[in-house]
Structures are given as C-alpha cells and as structure tokens.
Amino acid sequence: MAEFTHIKNDRAQMVDVTAKADVVREAVATGKIYLRDETLRAIHEGNVVKGNVLATARVAATIAVKDTPRIIPMCHTIPIGAITVDFVEGAGFIEATVRVKSTGKTGVEMEALTGVSVALLTIWDMVKSAEKDNDGQYPVTRIAEIHVLEKRKGT
Image (spheres, rainbow, N blue to C red):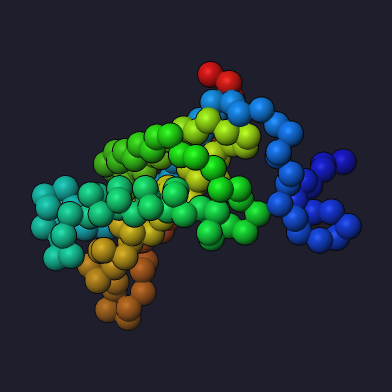
C-alpha cells in the first residue's frame, strides 16, 4: 500500500526533513500549450500586442519556482541554486521546459512543475484575445502533458 507522507492521523502535514542531509537535487519538468497557427506565428514574429510572450513567460516561471512554497501548502522553503526555462516551438504548440537545481533536504519536482505550469498559463494570458472564437471560447487552446521528465539526487 502506498504511503502518503503528507497525511498523518487523517491530517495534512509538512514532512519533517530536519534529519536529512543536504544533497544536490535537480528536477526537469515540461508541458505544452496548443495554440492557433496565427497566434504561434505572432509569438514567433514578436507581434503580440502585450509584448514579448516567451520572455514574460520565462520571468513568470522563475518567480513561480521561487514562490512554490507559498502556493502549495506542504512544500518546504528550499534554497534554489539555479533555474532554466526553455521553449521549443512545434507544429501547433509551444513546449516549455523548466530545470531547477538546489542543495537541500528535499526535492525540487514541485518547483519545476509549478514553473512549467505558470509559464504556460502566462503564454495563454498574453494571447487569449487572439485565441478566442466569436463566442468567446477557446476551441484550440489547451495546456497538456505537464510532467516531470527527470529528477536527480546527489549528482
């Protein structure tokens, strides 16, 4: 049976990591946002009214990584050593990848996942006016495939 370390006596709790040694840790997460071809072209050409979409999404992802413990209640505040945010434009989508490094007592998967999620949400926010149809709906726009690509401990 799976052990849920954040639940004890039917109550949510932060896991006690004080006895653990500091270890180098790294996590990489990725996800995609699917957009209309016209929107992707506008992002690529730098013609989005709100500004440079990917630069803004990169900054938003960085802030999100650092703020993860504020928005996910049982995450520990950890020292972030490095954050990289990259984007790849594909056929009908943009893929965001966030790599987070730390030296500490617990992993950085949640930080990487939060960074990717906020990067993709920021892209959506900056282009939503171009993505809406005549009824104000988003028939093409979707965020998908957010997951941890890899995590390392002690390397």
